[in-house]
Image (tube, rainbow, N blue to C red):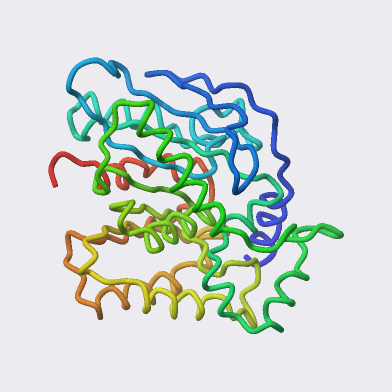
Amino acid sequence: MKGAIWLFILAVLGQALPLAATPQVSSGSVVRLKDFKSDYIGQRTVDIWLPQGYSEQGKQKYAVLYMQDGQMLFDAKNSWNGQEWRVDEVASALLKQNQLMPFIVVAIHNAGDKRHSEYFPQQPFASLTAEQQKALYQLERSPGQKLFVTAVYSDLYLSFLVKELKPYIQSHFAVHQSKEYNLLMGSSMGGLISLYALLQYPDQFGAAACLSTHWPGIFQQQDNPVPEQFYAYLRQKLSPDSQSRLYFDYGDQTLDAWYPPLQHKVDQLLQQQDWPEGQWQTRFFPGADHSEQAWANRLEHPLRFLLGTAQ
């Protein structure tokens, strides 16, 4: 099992960032913001999925789902591993059945080899000792290639999201302004940064869905100080009084095999804080691995939690 997990990790971390064309979708349409300028993180590609029938005319307003790893969501031909989340297919089917409120997806492409530095929550990282931080910065993703290519800068990424991208979306698309209609989703490290955005900016976002959340933070189980710093941060920041909503899930194969005991601790914390049942949810998917295919197979569940009309 250990050997299989490490082969999987090396495959994931060895990925190259393709120069992807605008994704082709089966329903709706995609508007690409190529090289969207930012004073915080430089230029970034952002794809905006608009559902079938979207119109900026009339009174209809749309919720906004901000998703991480945007190049992996719509078109397998554009992804590094030939997989996709099938966001357009799953969302369109649920919208057609009136199971979700109208919404658009803002798919933010990741930073390639800087992804770990961009998605690792900065406050928990800063709470590590100087010695622990130094040790993490020495970790390699593959021989001769650092896991953290630069210093952790997720606070700058959140500034880009909240102060630049979100205002642009609100001024150029027919969307709701209030936080309960501005939502976050991501997987693995993308799950961590989605949760971090919600907790750092509870006045900007109403909910986060975190699939296969990478609670280890790094790719090391033994002598890993990161999870305890995440728990300390959560104890400080989580509060049911915030009215924020949280969705978590996990499998038990490949990298997800590391997650069950770590997710259980987060669930226990939410229970200890008396979070109401409808305000948070954790789902376990036995046999599910750490892949876009697995997340696509269960995407309907976080979408219903975030955007369901039956709430």
